[in-house]
Amino acid sequence: MAGQLSVTIVEAKELHDEDTFTGSNDAYVEVYLDDDYKQRTATISNSTTPQWNETFQFRVEANQDHLHIKVYDDDGAAGRDSIGSAKIKLNTVKQSGSFDDWVKLPKLMGLKSNGQVHVRMTFRA
Image 1 (cartoon, one colour):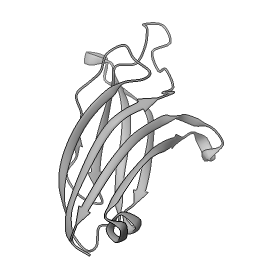
Image 2 (cartoon, one colour):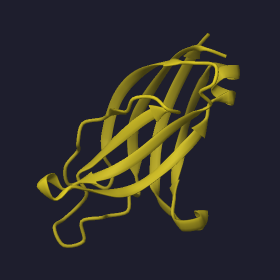
Image 3 (tube, helix red, strand yellow):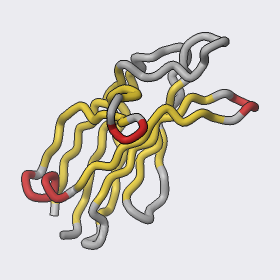
Image 4 (cartoon, helix red, strand yellow):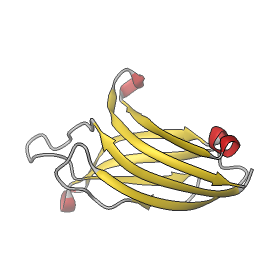
């Protein structure tokens, strides 16, 4: 089912601290649909509990079934470290019209978590 998807990256908590020696994370989130362009939040410096409250709009095609979320620690000129990632199936959102929940960033084999991201979505066909 095609339609318009509004995604708000609200905040994160319990993010794994990638900056062991230099303080807390400088976190940002990349959001994208299957095979689509990436959108990203601003970088929030020195926090393992960043708050973004940023909303992104996507045109969802019928063959796009997942929203991808990747959280990074921005190390400036040194690059970036991956904190974690998650994939949300869009079936439920397409049927109910909304989603508002904490999404875990699973660690290796899903046994632990690298933190959680609060995501809100609305869908209109």
